Image (cartoon, rainbow, N blue to C red; front, top):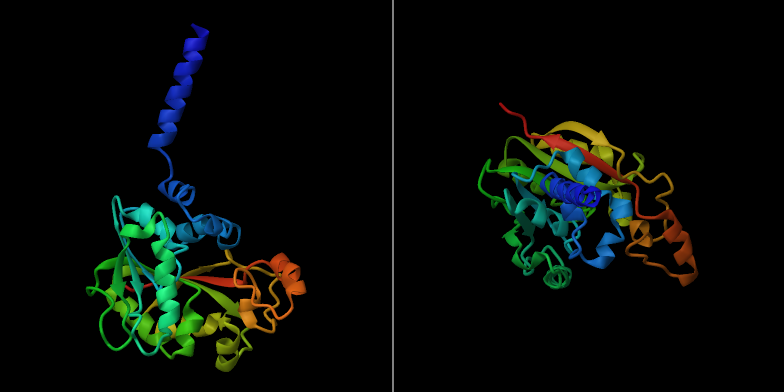
Length: 265
């Protein structure tokens, strides 16, 4: 009788855990995620970051320029049952971007066990809308601002994101953080962007900074590397292979994590 009670208790416990499982935990622990991506969780803190942004499974969410799909592999299963997930990528034939890089990212995402059915939309920066006006709950972007700053597209990307968001909608930004003394030229060269520039550009198109977090901070990152942020993992662009251990010990870059709101008028 005691053994039966123990077995029934275990079954009830397992059933309860399934029913009340945190869907974000489930998405992050998905065994179909790319193995190399899982190794980056320790640096990128996906649960803490997405929780800070206020994401919910029922939301409609756009991820801007998902690159190889690191965050997409979490967002896609998290949102597709109750919500909507869209990934916005540039047209590979768009002259302002490197077609080789965009096509490489598309090829990498095609290898993912999770992203084969991911819905894609095109991210234009020539006055075309990102998506239906005031139709989505959240727009997210991770480590992309420096690229858009270099191509002089940053403000336009913020603008189309603002237009697509519902009033009260959220823009979530994670980016390599530069010292406030950096000039725009230094930001473009190193891949680090100042917090003040990111905030000011967002404010100029109408966003309000709701809050910021140190979730993705890394005080070990000195930001004075010869090849900028690309010296650090995962890129590890090194002139001397003997430096590999040094940069691995630093970890990924120091990052700002910003939550903006589109005001309700």
